[in-house]
Length: 242
Image (cartoon, helix red, strand yellow):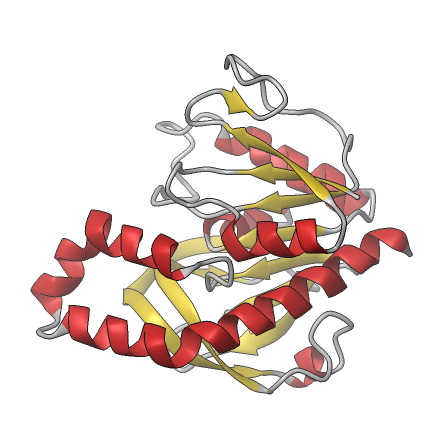
């Protein structure tokens, strides 16, 4: 199993998702379009891959807007790649920004949310999620890492799999094997704390005690998130072997 991973920001790596791919006996190639880096061509200058040369595709998060093609000119190429894998019925997993690009690829809309959502937030599985092959049998309520200020209006025909009080679209599926997660199941404690160090000033300004709250949530929910991510990633990979 060979997975293509699009890493849109250098401090937003594959984390627990990458660990689960390796544990399942797979491999993944990383392309970082912001820098031109590719793990298969580390000297840089690598163009966005074309077609469906891998068994599956993961598109990770990043701080940029999913609608900002002007300042991030690789975004249309990622959208084309998502659409190609989806139309070929090869598994696609989009995380946060990646989920938003999936929505754009299939006719959905990405817009500003009412506020920023940061931390381990309670989300609930929908009836479609309960019957989904990747999610079935998992706990219907999860506390999963969030860091986003945009939200998604689903493409026509997409199935909503998880919802939340603040962000209604938390997870969705397009077709049989394209999954978008607005939350961040890939985060390890090191990744999450790196984001706090880099982008936490805004959260601190809005919320007294943010650091204490974040560390408490990390302690209470990280282990369960890791179990969720391992199970979901490996089930998602199994779709490639159908």
